[in-house]
Each structure stands twice: as structure tokens, then as C-alpha cells.
Image (tube, rainbow, N blue to C red; front, top):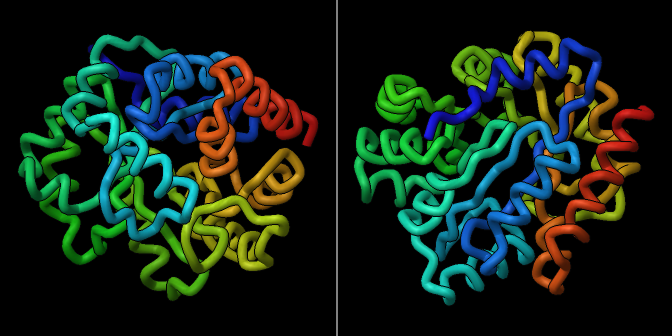
Length: 260
């Protein structure tokens, strides 16, 4: 299956005046997780992250941890997630969010090719340091998989520029220091980091972590190109929301971003 390239799709949407919305689904969370993915795309997501369930997700908070554990208990593996994606056609780019151990276990070349074979065109590996990511970036790039790098509020200016230069697809701005999870209030560090990133790159800058609903999405995207929403949607999924109900939440955020 040939996937949709990440950066070109996001640039096109951004340059048309649209604020970008990236949503997240834990692969293998339920029997209908692929239906949730497709419903998110139909509801206005510009790209979708698929989390590969992992037993020790260091950047993920309680909600994503619970979703990963539930998926693992169902017997979900990276191979089973990619197998389901391989037979799924989407109109938007699909990325995976995973951790170094899964990449190292498979080997960088094999893992990148497996992602590409499943139509995945982007990868986010939050525990892969910039200094050690060269080999992965090389093999991923050769397979047509764009590596998205993360920038934190405390990242020094020089390192920020290096992250932006080497990130592909988009630059993932982390709203706050900590783990994923919906918060009642958006951290003040979000707008500061967004401005710093936009000052050094023309690549799409998308802010994530802690966004719980439409108002926060609009606030986080004010100085950036868009937002990632994950834990808030996964909490709904864990509580039994149907694909259509999750799509309604995505559509509400999409409408808020479009109104500005």
C-alpha cells in the first residue's frame, strides 16, 4: 500500500490557510480501532498518529498507558497493527509513534521497510536522542518514512535549530515538560516554544501534549501551524465511545480551529 507523504500534505493544507489537526489512536486498542482511524480522517484530521503498544511508554501519561496495556492484553503486536494498516486506505498521512526498543528489536532497515509496506509515511520515536538518530533517519528516509523530531520548552536555541533542520514531516513542539495527558489549562510555555520554532523553520510546527478540547486547541495553534490531540480522544475510546462519537469530538475540534 502506498501512503500519503506527511510533509507535503501538511504544507499544502497549511499554505491554504488551514490550521492543522493531528489525532492519535492506539493501534489494536479494540476490534474497531481501524474504524476509529478512518472516522478521524473523515472528521477532519490532517494526519493520524498510530501508537504501537509498548509496555514502558516513557513519554505517555496514564491514559495512553492504559490504552497500550489494554491493546497488549488483546494480543496486539507491532506486526498485527501494521498488518491491519496494510489493508487500510486513508486519505491522510499515517504516522507511527513508538519507542527505540521496538525499532532496535526489528532492526532499523527492516522496521522502516515494514512501516513503508504498511502505508506508514512518518515515525515519531520520542526516546531516540538526536545524537543517536542518524542511522535510523538514513534507513527511514531510504524507505520513504519521514522522521518527526520533538522539541521541548527547555531545548536551547542551537539544538532547537538542529532539531528543526533534521525533522521531516513536521516539527513536534511539546507544550510542557512531562507526559501526555489532557490538562485543564494550557501551559504558558506552549506559545513561547511555538514562536521560537516558527522563527527558525518553515516546516509545519505542530504543538502537542496536554490539549483536551477545542479551546485549548485554538490557543495552542495561535502561534503554531496546528495541534496534536491524543489522550482526550483515547479517554473517550477507553470509556467505550464508538467511532462515530470519537469522530464527533474530532469534528468539534476541527470546527473550532477553522473558526480560529
